[in-house]
Image (cartoon, rainbow, N blue to C red; front, top):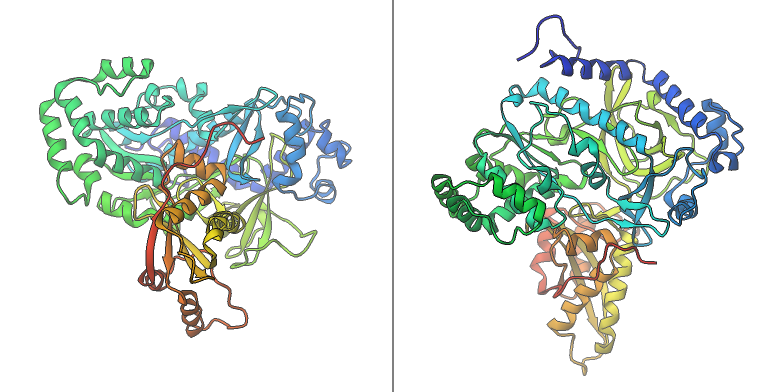
Length: 599
């Protein structure tokens, strides 16, 4: 219930005094976004004035926009890689940032097949915490009574490694979950989760998921919202329940813990929580053994008000499946963030997924925008394009995001394409269009056309002894399976009829060869996170890709400019391809992956 009339906000009546302060902070930051941006840039440049990077471009202590824009180039990761490598190797001099680099955050984007390393500083955790602290204040405006129950969130840590210089390198959320901000967070009745820290912080993904699910089942009536970071993660949890409900019900019935839960801290924690409840166990067995799992979320957790998951960008492909399992519950996309920087939040979190817009918080970093032509996948042709400031973007136009951060990234191209949908006060709101150049994505993996091409080339080497080659190929991310997996359509040409064509075993090995060629984020998803299923090659009849071209031309494509699409998701095209499949083959094993980076 909203607090008394003494507190108010243009966004709506706050649920409590803490929310009132958070909503006022949002108003304060967005009322004069340009002034906040000017101040942020001056702070970043003055703090880092003595760094090697700013001296390299002869900024000479200047903190104004005009000098900054005239002297500093727009850059990509590869431009910064030599400096990052020096920091990773142990150089502690102020190369990019005056504050010591505390760790590297590993991006889901890759460079030369390995995760990009994003330098960060301790103070950035505080800045990220500010954004986290605003989320529930906004959610409480739309969903009342969240202080009367709990959230069932499936959170996991991922493996980390150390650079040659001894700095930890890990994903941004692993860094957050292991921080004091998360582990020792103060009690907040609006933000209580069912999962104990020991379950979130357990490095074994099975033990972590099992324990989090078990806690969620015990508290099924207290759960008011379900969530994971990505939609794919929540669907993995549902699939996990499908596969393990009998054992979970056994634990609940007997009050004993699955012996597979062997992590000492987690085992002790769970054994103190688990109690025999035969009635609950019987209910779970009855519900989960039914063939139809439609609406299973609200059947098991009947008081669920919404799902808290990212369903924008590549995650939009999971919306129909989530709607099926949840019975059409609202899906809340609350914030927009990456390893490089946390950007902003959704001020209308329960809107339709297709209408999600994020309001950029101008205090998080200095933001610039590179105009982008819709439908264009290439880079801008102008070698010195004019970047637009945050307050000057135009509604309806698309831009690539460029950031300057307190951690030392200067005019760095993030690779996200955003469309301006409106403004909150003077801060723009953006719809996330897509990640630039990404062809395939199931979870946090991002595979581009060049990587896919290289993987096909490497795999097709196995066909040489059969005098067979890949004439054409395309692909799609199949999310109907859980976990989802890559499907590659191959049209083959056998050059010598006297030689036997490649066998199922050989084509299965081609699948594995492709997986071995893909980047480390993909391979980690396959090996450690179990978030991606085995890659599949579907061999199609000869002439299929000519039919594909005929179909495209019949719909108005120019025969002179037609190119085979390297990724497809248009239903009639998928149906055409699938109707021409002569054989299907799956990767027979897991690709190689270790937390250590390839040298």
